[in-house]
Amino acid sequence: MSARFPGTANPLGPRARIAVVVAAVLLLAGGSVGYVMHAQQRTKGERTEADASFALTGPALYFRDTASGRVARQPLAGAPGVRTAGARTSAARTTGGPTCDRFYASEDGALCLRARPGVLPKTYAIVLDRQLREKRRIIVPGVPTRARVSASGRMLSWTVFATGDSYATTSFSTRTAILDLRTGYLIKSIENIQLTIDGARYHAPDVNYWGVTFARDDNRFYATVSTKGRTYLVEGNMRDWTAKALRQNVECPSLSPDNTRLAFKKKVSDDAAAPWRLYVLDLRTMRETPLAEQHSVDDQAAWVDDDTLAYALPGGSGRGSDVWTVPADGTGTPRVAVEGGSSPVAVAGPAR
Image (cartoon, rainbow, N blue to C red; front, side):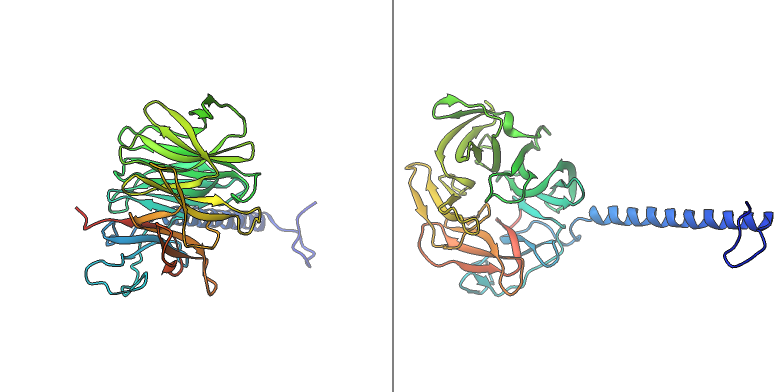
């Protein structure tokens, strides 16, 4: 049967049919070109790094600006020419960094974790230089949750949720990687490390690691391991590729600049809405000190200096989160350092 226009009685002639086909082809071609251009623009946007004038210079506190999703910075309290009122500074934040969901840095480089949502979520682990220009990109299945860079800038680590979305549950699964920038060697998952618990080699299918923090020698590191419903602080050795459990109920450790103490979150309640409290562990005496922050902190705290910790809490006035600081010795009062910020890291300076 010949094709007809709706509402007409005459069949299309050969020329009309050809015109319809040509129009359809042009329409499809135009749509394809538009899609390709959109995809190219989107890809270009995803690869956009920091503005040319934005780099790792200190002393400054770098953080993720929750309104824009981009990395920003502001001078640290006590920096020359900066007036302070508590933990706040008189200087406005400087924006223009890369777009990240988690961020961490040393003086020599940074790690940016960027989520790519989808049916199967994935994360881009993006290695950045001092100018915050992209050096390497690694695609990781999962949702970004923790990022760390060693003081030298050589060792990088990240953790993603493979399933689940909260450390407050027992149903999640994590994958933690370590990248050595000097050799280029990538350990996609540290779950195969030789683990010792209570003096004996330990194997279990439910072992999960997260929250790596590196020592100054770039060999020793600390992390959390969970198994059988318990969490442990482990001390790892890169050269021997071994890890030993030191104590229970330690999550998201963060090693102090002088390498003598670990900040961590400790489970103090079964209330899923507020299970943790910040503590500091003296590695010489193994004595724990609760910090003045009374709120539940679901973050891997960062050391601003040997005396102060920074961390994110749910924000006020509709903000996603704010960065707070608190003394590391259990005294003092928590203070807001950055409104509308997360992923804090202090970068020392001035830059070399």
